[in-house]
Image (cartoon, rainbow, N blue to C red; front, top):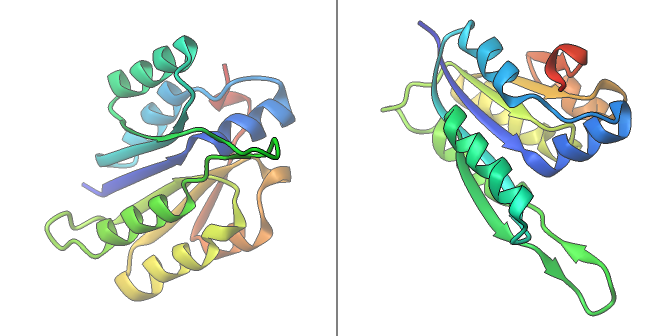
Length: 161
């Protein structure tokens, strides 16, 4: 059975599905779909912590599905801009997962349309022989990311609620 690791850029998925469909992403439907492909041995969701009750409920739901939820504090800068980026953390975790022979991962699935991950996804395939997949909203996903993976899975109505 194929061993799969899943990594979710929660903010990217939230904002792109909201912008494109005015709906929320269905993580349970995603879990069912990926489980049909093999065994999910690792699943991490990266989110920003705003200490909001609805967010806590969402994070609890992710945990009940099977995700490890990693939180980073929301930072509001004095100029009004905000920071809450998980790109480096996701990259480090994916590289550590890919290089861990004890896990023996066959496929890494990234949920994000962010082109900043294109080199990462090429690296896991070229250097570790791991198949890279991405899920993203087609029209809001970077071509460089789409072209860097062995399979791009467009988020459509079947993965929305």
